[in-house]
Length: 417
Image 1 (cartoon, rainbow, N blue to C red):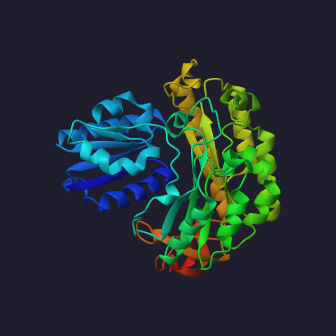
Image 2 (spheres, one colour):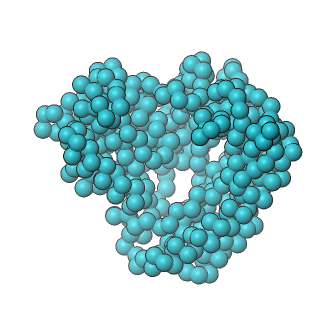
Image 3 (cartoon, one colour):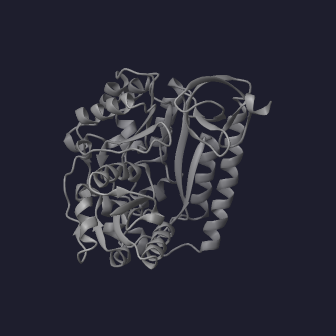
């Protein structure tokens, strides 16, 4: 039997696909979708648009005579995806993927029970398209955000074994991976289910691993970063840790943040950003939801002004998406044309800021790590995780001089000659 995997969504899903790929390869033949008898859809349910896209894809595959196994977040949050699929396996049941594939030919099977599965104990088969290895450190989160349906799919926080995570990173480095991406729904709360915030300890352990590699720490929410700020800064003070901070604020209005049940304030966000910037030259990434049901004009402009003040390098702007079963999904929605216009204004500002931020680096020299193939050249990263388009070979550390930039990347001066 030939089996293919299609992966949607975040780095956690990509890490889950590495696990399923390993288990599938031990029992079946991995193939392209065009040749596959069974296609595993590792799904994402973060917004309605993505869900509709995946539902359409499942229908397309079924129309081609493929059996479809549904994995990922939609397994627990989309009745329609369940109805269309031949078998289903929830994120904490990935060790059952082989049984789910077999079940697709025997009347279907569903593995949806809640389980405390430590994924660091499962095998991984990573693609060698680049030199990036994704390592999950936990499942679930501590949040109660009013707009989020991912909680329904991933559940409460279950932190994985620190020793096994370190071992997994060691093995990835030995296998030649040069960039380790630490991921979870919220890296900041790692360990809290076991009694304490353990991310700094984990990073310190990883930083002591032999080899020339870099670590990108995934998204962390402001309240947890603030609670361990000194230990966190000390852990980041290691050349192997990218000076990259993904800290989602979501809104510049504390009233809206309270409605969102985010658990932090604008001031918490600013305190963490200021603390990092006093210590390091960081690349700051944040997330904004535009058009939350209780966001009025004043709320939006507070968000706009916050971005003007903080000047983040990366802003992930998402128009509010109503998700079934959430508190925010029951609220009266803002007209789409208003949300679209607010998103446009904020996007224009972020592009302007990104370009101004990057122009400061023209003429400067950096040592970069070449991590993946671009459309024409190679993508590399500075020690602060700034994207640099350059020449070179995968996994190579090389010197570059910045000759030009765009709002979202820098250009090696060699590419201009």
